[in-house]
Image (cartoon, rainbow, N blue to C red; front, side, top):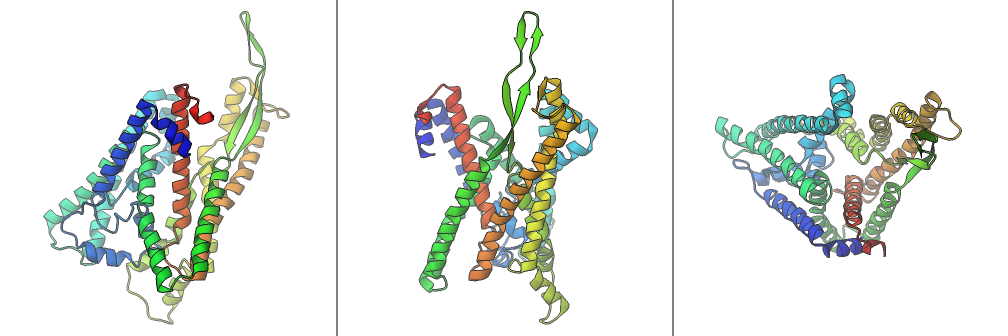
Length: 427
């Protein structure tokens, strides 16, 4: 990987793209340090210390601690992610959007992107209002009034819209996907504080040397597993029939249909985490029940250290993996495209038999990918429950995102160098 960056740095155009990407990330980090006015940040941080394993804790991880500091980028790219998911689901449910996406070409994709931007602004304002209601209800405002409410809500909404625009600038003028790189920067920014916390616990004696070594070895093992599965794919052989057009003969070549083992990425974990932690999130807004009552026992059952929570979390990841894979990959559409282009899978007739075979393969690799995601997501919970250490419950999700984005950046650099006929990274 470092060899790729070194070779890319030697090319002036790629060097400018890398510097532009780093400049945008720097602007994002500066914005993450600018607080929104009228909010008591110290009280807010203290409040969030007890919400690490809730939906709000997940938001805080994805924003690089900006959510618990009430900065202008507190909502991070969550409104854009939510808008993208909603539009993607509506594209499947609404025929007009589906035609625009599939048959509209470049113009249709631009319209879909424009709709997503407007949806991001609306969701950002709604989430900004929800955030304002949270801090005002818990007495975290320095002054409470209509003007303060307008300033806080609009600042949060404008921050999410500006961050979406910065991500698009990286995608167009920088290296890789801008939204992914911003998410990458948010998670990596938490690494120094996490290391300092572990060293402090090690010196204080609350963390044993064996536990520290176990964390390092476990993280490295998970990284290796993520890299291996991210590059793994099932290749279905495809043969194209020969056809004569005029005096030329076309087709006859053999190729393959690649199917990623983990085509849904980290989205099933994010969905499962949001739903599994929803009861704990709701309970955090209510008064703590007395010990020995039914609600006290229920809160203990839904805690991230309980076996019931881990099993439910794992099953939700399995379900969302199949759901997301079904949305992203349509076996019937793939089989029809192969038939139109004169392609076929050896041993299977074009049409229904081909789509049934592709669906069977899709179900098998989705099961493997879902089990892999479940293991990576649940292992930190098990480790946290055994060692009684807090703050690492979301470690599996963070590592998957960081490693996945790092691989995407390297692949983007390799593609750029290959387009310029640069062979240095292959030597």
